Image (cartoon, rainbow, N blue to C red; front, top):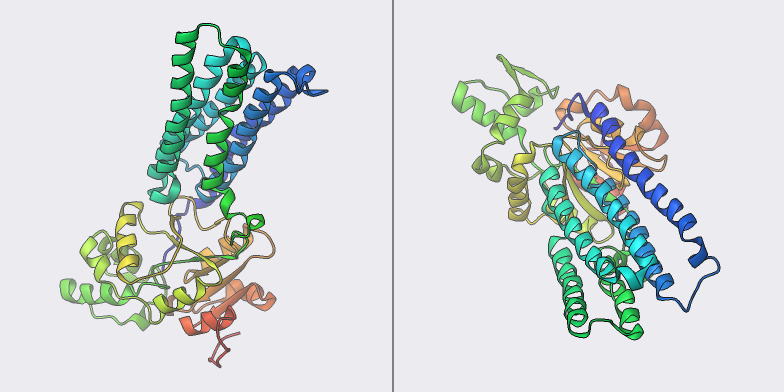
Length: 404
C-alpha cells in the first residue's frame, strides 16, 4: 500500500528536461563532427590512422549514447541537486567526446591527448555512476567495478604510450597506428560486459518480459504488524479489514503515516511477514520473466528492504525505489501493485501493450476508476499469489470469486 508523491507528475516532467538537454548535445556533436571531418570520412581514407581513430571515437560516443539511454530509463534524473549535477556531468562526457573526435582527426599531433582523453572518459563514467547510486539509493545503478577494471586497462595503455614516447621521442608510424586503435579494446569490452552480452541477438534473455512487483501489500504484510503495534502503543484496536482506504484515519494520524513511521525501524521492517505464497511464486515467475522490485518506501530504507528480500529468499534482479519519480517504469511490461493510483500511472504513461495486476486488498476494493481498464483486459485483479500465477500462465486457472 504505497501512494506516490503528489508532485510525481511534476517531477517526471522536470526529469525530462536534462534528458532533452543531453540528447541535443549528443545530436549536435555527431552532426557537426560529420560535417567537420567529411573530407576524412567521405570517401573513407582507409590508409590514414586519423580515419580509424575517428571511427574509434565515433564508436565510443554512439555506444555510450545507447548505454546512457538505458541508464536514464531505469534511473531517470530526479528533480534534485544530485539529479542536476548528474545531468551536467553527462553533458561533460559528451564534451569529452568532442575533444576525442578533434584529437582523432589529427592523431599524429594529438595522440597523447587522444589516449589520455579516454582515461578521463572512464573517470567520468565512474563519477556519474556513483552519483546515480546515491541519487537512487540503488547499488545496482552502476557497475562501478566494471568501470574501474576497464579504466585501469585504459590507464595502462596511456602509461605505456607515455613511457614509449619519452624513451623514443618521435614514434614510428606503426606504433601510432597501434595506439590509435588501442582504445577500441577496453571500450568494446566494457560495453560487452555492461549490456551487450544480455541482448537477445546474443542468445540471451534480454527480450523476456519484465515484471515490476510492489513490496508493501503485495510481497510484505505490513498492515497487520502496524495495527498490532498501534494496539500495543496506543490502545487502538483495528483489524486489517477495517483499513478501507490508504489514508484511513487513526486519531490525528492515518494508516499511511503510521506505516511509514514504523518502517523507519530496521528491526520492525525485518520482522514483517511475507504475503502468503509470495516467495514461492516469484521463484516460479523468475523462470519465465525478469523480476524487478519497485517500492515507494523512503529511500533511506532501501538497504532494509534488500535485507528483508534476502531473508525471505525473494527472487529478483534489482530493486527500484520509485518514491521520487513514480511508477511510470519505462522499461517494465507489467506491474503488480495494490495501489490503484500506481496502476493508473503505469498504464496511462506507457505503450499500449502494457498490462497490470491489481493485488486485491481491503483498501482497493473501489475499482470504479479502472473499470474501463479492467474491461479492456489491460488490468486484472488477483486476490492471491496463486491467482497471479494463473493469470500469467504459470499454472492452470482456478476459479476464484470476484475475479476477471
